[in-house]
Image 1 (tube, each protein chain N blue to C red):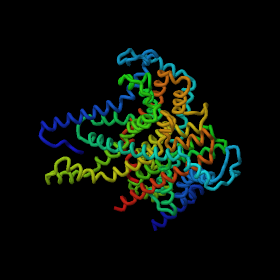
Image 2: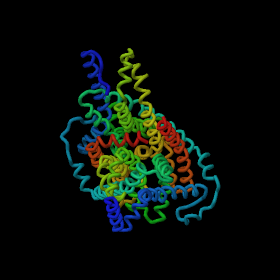
Image 3: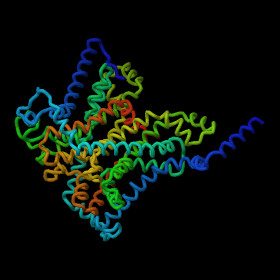
Image 4: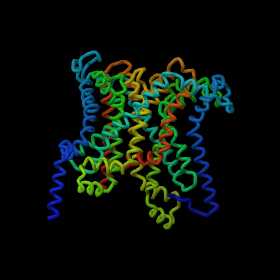
Length: 282
Length: 307
């Protein structure tokens, strides 16, 4: 922690400077979001008023309109289903593998881990081209399963990376005593290790959820009108005839992004831990 | 004697367990890794290999999988002599360099501010990561509305009607601003974690030796922060190289291809023009470029672990 050093008066002055700088930064960083949130609370006339209106009596009509639209609700449900499945699947597949990487040296292990690392680095579009062909030939294109598989594949490296770090930090004596007591390796993993690694699981879930909820590219290619997720619906909304319906556009934008922001805030501690451990521990 | 009895009990217990569990126990490591391995091979490896094959053929979506006509390097040749594609390489590299540079400088600055030990820092940090947490496509659409020629607040403020996203000379800068706005705090979070983990003794020693604050920062803090800076730099480079959402939402690659990044180009060729062979070749060229980045990244990490 860098404490402010110097005489008390100097310290006060510097603290004030730090606060001012941060306040300016927050104003700049939040302005686009706050302004658009404001737009979503305006009537059509207020949205297009020139000069812009800064004070008005907010209306929630735009939100009411969006929430009664059937395409918004179906996209919302799709996003929920797809994100939940992707989180469950990638943790279910990735956590045991991460445990194996953390605790056991085995043939081909380092090559596999290296390959996972490379997977994380590859641009999604380059992988999406062949993935689309595969799903198309299997008849999976435009199903929810195809996007779930895509998100699972893309978040696996992240999950394995983060969870390996958490597993390595747990003392090996825990399982050893369980093994001696006759627990199978799987039982020791399931009943001793997994409960202790819960913070890691939370971090990995959040990052996977973010990836699945926020993704546009995969969903744009791999879904149709019935199975599309919220970001795709947003982009279509923007490009379509309703592009001038700023009230609806901004209200649905806020509704799309709010859940993932709230969820990340609640678990901010884990988010930072996950991000940095995933990034730094390597 | 007692030990013998215990051993017998263990054996009996082991024998009583279902054989599938014993099998799992003996092959635990492989069972644990198998699903990950399968997903990697089936959803990742095989399709990638197939697209490699595809990039040397002329193939349409209606043909059977291996019915494409072999054309050698013609697809690659087409791409590399196509001025839109070669320009896309330059635009992507330039955009990546400019965005990452701004994110690093600004991100480090914010991390240093947030690292000062004052009350309320958590609130500032929380507020600053909002753009990073937002759904990228929604963030880009927010900016599109702000920059709208006739009703956007930016033009209303400057009293002009600049078509920010419709002019070849301004569109790429608009996308740059959004990229910096979105992911500067990604760098901040990594560097902040780094700053928090640094030992305080070297700084105290520097202060005793009479170093002023600037010297302490340049000569002590920054060198100690180096590994974190490298990680942030490389991760951001990898992520900006694949930039897609903002371009798609704001300009779609236009105007006059001035924001045509490689991801956008590959997307258009493959999923709008449905030319999968050229798309596969473009995808593989992108893969090769990012593999170079990736190798650098792993070499850096390896070297750091060895130190």
